[in-house]
Length: 126
Image (cartoon, rainbow, N blue to C red):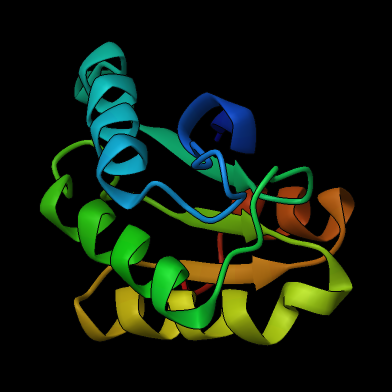
């Protein structure tokens, strides 16, 4: 079975304020705009790459972004890997947990290879 992976870079959806903090409303708007461009019939798995985020993402920021993904579950209903820096791994794990609690198969990774391996595996989603 082939897997189609859509990699979504941090600068595609994360917007920082002039002070360097997350502009949550604009970031959520950008996620919604990305969701419109993804054809749900194609069944993409997604990788959110937050390693190069221009703003520091707090646990709460990641939680709110995960909640937005839950609202977009028709688009992001398949496996989703959250790729983050090692320093942000715990925050990313919290984001994944919030999504998992809503039934979305999300895992956090610090390596592109690990995320790709999980996305292409046929085992349990979470």
